[in-house]
Image (cartoon, rainbow, N blue to C red; front, side):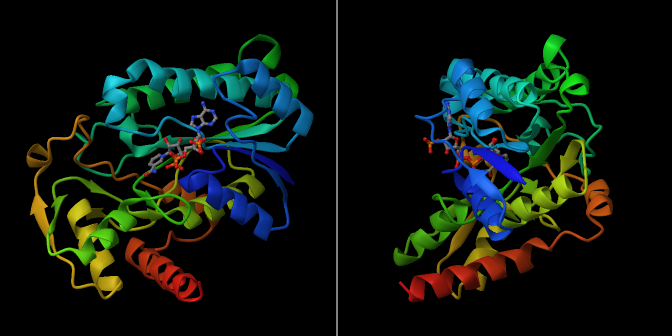
Length: 297
Ligand SMILES: NC(=O)c1ccc[n+]([C@@H]2O[C@H](COP(=O)([O-])OP(=O)(O)OC[C@H]3O[C@@H](n4cnc5c(N)ncnc54)[C@H](OP(=O)(O)O)[C@@H]3O)[C@@H](O)[C@H]2O)c1
């Protein structure tokens, strides 16, 4: 098995790289300079030359608040760039994993979203990710690039609330603050599933092996607010840091976020033949591993 990973230096892409190497799969992760996803000819050239079995597309414009000001750039990278990657994958006869987000939903449903629910994005980032899902699907079915003729397959993976090694994330934000006395102000009215990138990468590679296709939801188990997640980070790491709960209105972020973006992953669990790890257990494992690697440095 050979993978080509876009965004391989990012939070999630770096975990895919690690997971693929651990399985002794061949893997390449071109940098942005080597394969800017907004450049279709670069995508076609690099994917064609590398000829992977699967492209795992993690590269994206991920700054949710900045996207409100830079909506054009978010669309260029997320919609157009994803379409470029999908076309390049289809042309090379490679399967494509497209990483999407729980933010394709507005949260109004109030119960976990299944893959078949209609998308209803709230902000510019979310709109660009909805457009990306649509563009990836369309790139797989138009004209000479049809997956039926190339044998290419697509797996659209929605996930969210990610943390892990590789890039500064919410865990770093919470633990970084423990050196000061200032309590962090954390939103307590948005619900989601905190998820370790390691578990997403491992599940998705297992899904590829099992022949999964279409839209799948992948997260760790259980639900939390950002405030509950922050409290758990402090407790599990034995920190005396403090967090104060605030509402989304008090936080006043540029982008509106769904209040309840919990994804239903029953179909994914069925496909994998196992249950997702509860988020608190995954967090404990991650923090223990992180503590061991920090103390050995
Ligand atoms: N983080 C989350 O909580 C979360 C939640 C839901 C969904 N997702 C989705 O998961 C995927 C991965 O997110 P992440 O958190 O790992 O993002 P990330 O850490 O911000 O990494 C994004 C990667 O994309 C690369 N990139 C950006 N523009 C590019 C371009 N034009 N050409 C080539 N590469 C480009 C970046 O390259 P540089 O290294 O050069 O900057 C970086 O390596 C994204 O699709 C995101 O929407 C993430």
